Image (cartoon, rainbow, N blue to C red; front, top):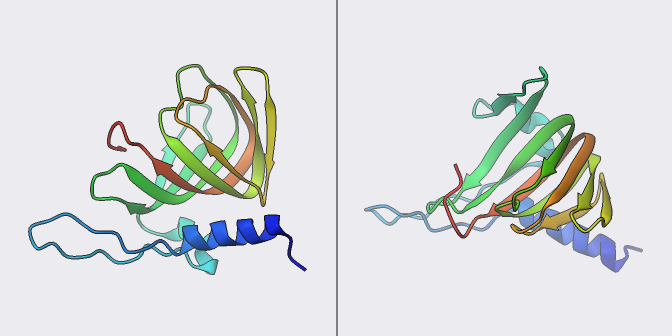
Length: 154
């Protein structure tokens, strides 16, 4: 029988993969279509889309990113992201509120106060825009939802 935690994770996944129709700005005031990530997309097919962005890092590795929805005010974005091993120190506030559901791999988050949080595949985490600390990973694939109330997302 599923536990409450499983129900929350299932509900979170469903909410992410079945985003509601958002109001698009424009002269004709039309509604946009729902942004959906199918089971096949989540299994990895999303990275075959022509709109996938490949970011090459200085060490020769690459990050894959597919945006499923960018709101008309560019303050809300969702998508799927695949990153290789890496370690980053976040000394300035993170800058956006981000919900992440890890499909593969994981991350160790060491907050500036020394608190260590281990996130593994199947776990979800939310980082506040004020978070600082160390992000350490052996690689991961995640679904993300980002909100940036202070400025548009590039």
